[in-house]
Image (tube, rainbow, N blue to C red):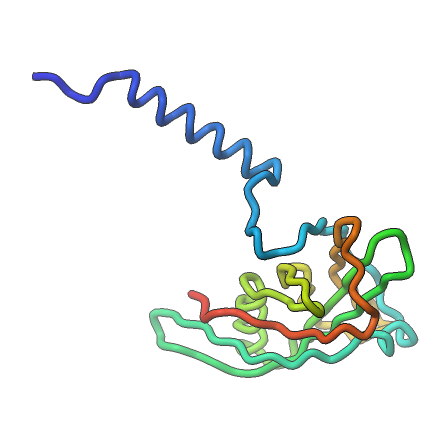
Length: 162
């Protein structure tokens, strides 16, 4: 009895390894998203907090326990004063389980910044107030992407699994 030739398994294994390398190097990306780099967090003072805009959004999460939906507000800042534009954001964890679900939804959501779209994964969940140790997550846009400081901000996405 003949089975699948060994070379087929080797070819599939090699293809899987190449796909993994390409993915880890960022060669495989969602083409609808602007290219970005996560650059870490930044301390937000009380004065800096005034520069962040409130961006309300509605989230939807499904789980074995049912479907949940709610609304929350992310705080996002566009800083285009440097060579490359930086977006920073945070969401307050002040609604117990609902805030955790909103944060889960943000992991797969998109942020529309004018006509650009970026992943919303950089928005940091926080339990502190500005000036009291609040750290916002920051994302740097690739060169050439310079949205206006007052560009419209919209969070959008599909329901996600919990």
